[in-house]
Length: 158
Image (cartoon, rainbow, N blue to C red; front, side, top):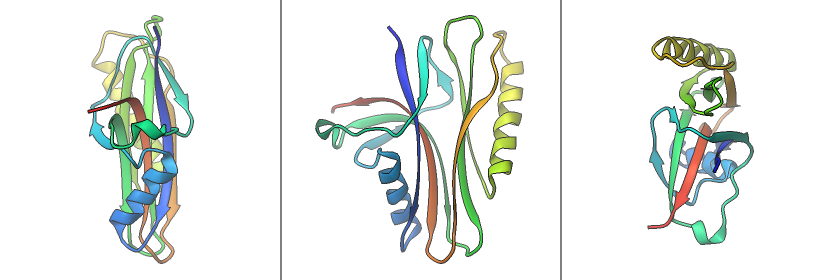
């Protein structure tokens, strides 16, 4: 059975960096969960989908297992950029690696993603396919902002 991992993203602007983070989580569809941070391993038989995560009413307050990148910014004229990158094994097992990075530009984040995954692939015997990524960004014009990208593994009740 395939495991579906949803890569979702969001941005937010508010009066504090924390409330901007909350708005970014709302935009990504993952705000009303208790987030459990995972490391970078994609289990076998995983299918990655880029789409907004859809909260079901019965999931409110559930544990949500995620790999997450977030960047908060309150300096005017600076960008908050967050991104996830991933590679999947070419042997058909559909296992792989995630990385999460933050920075002040999309180019910086993409470069860090590619550099990290390139090095991580060298540490493993598997052959991995091309780097894929998702990046969110927002410019701080006055109020604090936040960009979030998350890979959602599963929601689980307490």
